[in-house]
Image (cartoon, rainbow, N blue to C red; front, side, top):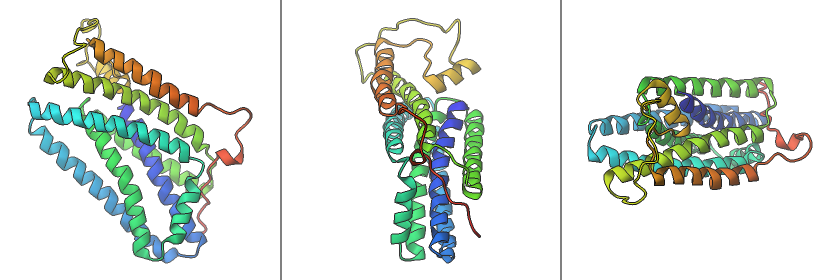
Length: 282
C-alpha cells in the first residue's frame, strides 16, 4: 500500500504540475478558450492509461501460475526498474526548469489541437509509466491494498497541486523529488531482486542460486507485514547469493550516485530552488 501511495503521489504530482503550469500559462497569454482542449487531452490520456493497464493486467491474470506469467512479470519488473531509475534522475535534473519548459511549449503551440496534444503526450507519458509500475507492484502484493494506496496517492497529488495552483503555495520541488526519488530507488532495488528471483526460477540464470538464509519461520512473505516489506524494501525470506548481492549493488551504486548528485548545497534554498505555479486569475 505504501509503495503504491508514494509512487502515485510522485507520478500524479508531476502530471498535475504540468497541467497546472500549462493552464496558468494559457491564462497569462489570454488563451482561455484553449483550456477545454487541454482538459480533453488530459482526459483521453488518463482514460487510455487506465484502460490499457486493466486490459493487460486482466489478460496476464488468465495465465496465473504459468511460465508465461512468470516471463511477463520478469519483463515488467525489468522495465519498471529502468523507468523508475531514469525518471528519478530526469525529474531531479529538470525540477528547477519545469515551469519554464512547459510555458515555452505552450507559447509555441499555435492551436487548441496542439495544446490538447501537448497535454495528452505529457500526461500520457506519466500514465504509461504509472501503468507499468502498477503492473509490477500489483504482481507483488494484494490488489485491494495496492488500489487503496494508489487512490490515496493520486488524491494527495491532486490536492497538493490544487493548493499550489489556487493558493500560490511555495514548494521546494528539488527537495521533494529528492526524497521521493530516494524512496523510489529503494522500490527499484526490490524489483531488481524480484527480477533475479524469477530468472533463477525460470532456469535462465544458473549461478548464485545458493540461499543465504531463511527467515520464513520468523516473517513469511505471505504474511501482511512480510508482504508490505517485500513491496517496500524488497524483503525476501530466503534470498539467493545473486539476488541479495545485486540488491545491495544497485542501492550502493545507483542510490549512492543519486544522493551524491542531489546532496543539499550550503545555505538556505533560494527562489531558484522553489517552483511556484501562479494562482489562477479567473
